[in-house]
Image 1: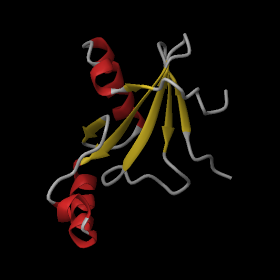
Image 2: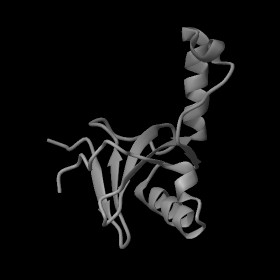
Image 3: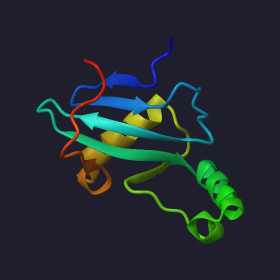
Length: 117
């Protein structure tokens, strides 16, 4: 059985991608991620593609959410061209190198690393 997450071990952190059991659509989807540093600190964010945001806003027009699709928001949102391991890792690496990681990701105060080791 396929796991609902993928773990990517990097030099400075472990990335857990919570994609669920259905295949991820790299061009039209969103995914929760958790970054765990060697000291045990965990941080979370959500990666979206632009197409996914458009898809969600169209759906909201029908469901009435977000004032009938007038707006879209998500905490700790990062927008990328494609959802794949390479893009996620390069984005995180760049945010760390530029000192912007803490502005985008939220520290998980109460959550422990929930993926098995």
